[in-house]
Image 1 (cartoon, helix red, strand yellow):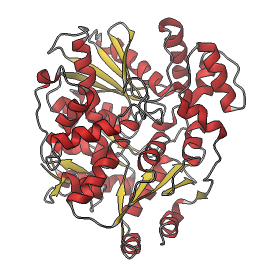
Image 2 (image 1 turned 180 degrees about the vertical axis):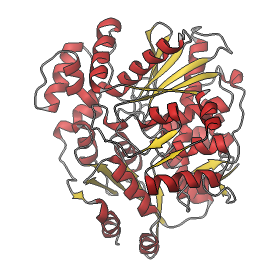
Image 3 (image 1 turned 30 degrees about the vertical axis):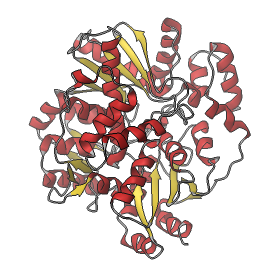
Length: 491
C-alpha cells in the first residue's frame, strides 16, 4: 500500500513514511493509493485489539498483524482506559450513542493519540531514522492534551502544542497548561483555531525552520488529523459499533445503519467514510456543525467560503472554518490532484472555491449536513437528560440536534449511531446552565455541583487538575510562530 499527496498523485510514500512526514511536502494531505475491502462478517467475535490490528494491517502492510495487535493492547490498556474502552448506549428510539471519551484525556482524540506514538516509534525503526522527531500540534481543545499525554517522555520525540488563546474551555486549557513531561511545550496563540492551524501548516512548509532543525538533528512531524496516522485508528470504532449492534441483536447482520458525527476538522466523519468504502454497511454520514456552519453550507451548496463571521461557541472543538480533512474527501470523489490543488489555491487567494454539481450530487448520496446554534444545543442537553436520563456535552448535543433535522427531512427510522466525542465534565458550566442550575465562577465548583445534581462522576483526569500547577502560560502572535519554534528547539 502506497500513499501520495492530494495535490501531487505522482509521488509514492509507504505508510510509515507518510505517517512520519505528516503533511505532504507540497502542502497536500496523504491518501492511500486505494481503499482496501474487508469482510466485516468475519469480525463478529473479535475483541477490539484484534479488530484494530486486522483493519490497520490492510493500510500498513509494513507492520505485522501481531505487531499491531501488541500496539493496540498497550495503547488501550486498563490503566489508560478505565472500565470499557468505549461504550455503546441506547439513547432513543433506534438511536445509539458511542461514547469515545473514556480514555486518559476524556475526549475521542485519545483513540488515535494513544496508539500513534507506538506506530511512530516503529516507523522510525523501519526507515532507519536516528534523528529526533519534533511533533507540532494545532488544537481547538482536545487534540492538544491527547497528543501531549500520548507523547510525554517518549525518547527521541519532542512536542509543542499551540491552541487559540481564550478559544477553549477552561478545563481544556488546564489539561494542556498543567501537562507533565520533560519533552513537552504548550503555547497559546493570539487568534482563533484557523489562525493556529494556518500557522502550523506554514511552519511545516518553512525551509528556514527545516534547515534550523536539521542542523540540530531534528525533523518535523504532526499529530493533527492532517497526519494519516490519526485517521486510521478512528476507522476501527465504526466497525466496532456495527459489530456490537449485531452481537446485541439490535440489528441484523447486513442491515444498513447511519452515523451522526459532530464535525470540526472533518477527520472523525471522514474515518466513517473510509469504513463505508471498505464495505461496512453505512447508509448516511450525518455531519453536525455548530454556528460555524461552513461544512453544512458546503455539503448543501458545493461552495466553500471562509469569508464569514467566526463564532466562539459552547462547542469550541468545532469552532473551525478551514476543515483540513475535507481535502481528502474532495480527492476521493474527484480523483484529480490538479483539481484539488486548484481548489486550495483559490481558497488561499480568494477564501472560497466551488465544486461542479456532479461531484456535489455524488457527495450528497452519502453525506447529510446540518447545524445548531448554542440555544438549540443547550435545550438538547436538557432534553436528553430529562427524557432519557442521559448527560451529554455540547458537541454531542449538537449531533443530536442535527440528527433530529435529518429525521424530519428524510422521515428516516433507520438505526443511527451518534458519536459522543467528549465528557460533559469538560464543559460543566454550560451543561449546568442547560440543566437550569446556577453556574458558579469556579470551574471545579461547577464540576462538583454537576456531580451532585446528576449522581454521575467526573473522570479522575479532570478532577485531578484542581491541584496541578500551571507550567505553560506564554501567548505568541501568529507572525512569530516559526521564530518561537526555532527558539524552543534550538539545542
